[in-house]
Image (cartoon, rainbow, N blue to C red; front, side, top):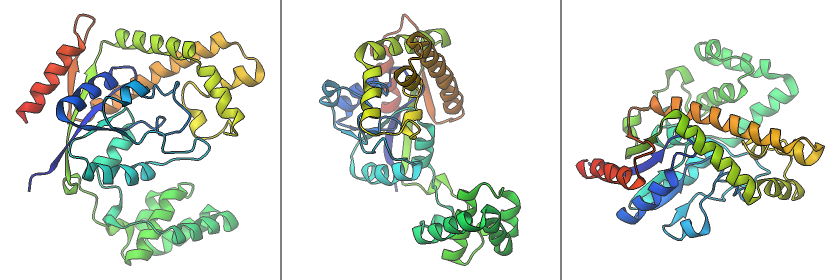
Length: 306
């Protein structure tokens, strides 16, 4: 049976994903699924380069503003929201640069396809809190020494997951069937724009300047004033954590802006490393003389050939 096709615009920050995704959505009658670990938070608009109201009016958008910035949000939570949309939407288009989200959607996440059991997790997490992580690890060693040898006692999440699988199935974690991407119900057709490094960095720097002009510092202040803790997961995003000392300790704003630019460039470099390892991605070569119209035409040629 032919697998459903899922489109994706991935790659580094500031590379032009939003522009192409809107055109693709109009061409295919598709709907856009945010695949960005910061755009999922409510009230974080400027610093995440969230689509504007005008852009959202051009195509249906999903998975924006689904999380409280005061609360942590995991890959598991994202995939739980996204997978039903991939099944329901006729032409879903993933847009974003969060590689872990793409991996969560395109590869099975649960060993042996065993669903989680919160009660079991809570029990072992309580055990770790009262007796220490070594006690939980010792429990794993008693039932599955192979997995225990591989996992450090401080890796509590995976230790608990191994115990959870064992209790639910009666089979050791080390004996579970490894996840197979071929078992997923979708086929992914992924694209990314490949800019010269210096050009991409200039685009990133320019984007940061625009964010500051649009009121990024005021956005960070509103979040803090609304009760979002400074150490919340959401506030560790680039563009937010650097401005907290400016607002609270009168740190020099110019230094914060330069730090945001440098960290954004470093993040883009990590994104490129991650996505270049994904052989499914069709890279569209860009330069100062190549237009988005030409990039879109190349993307459509690839789509029409599949």
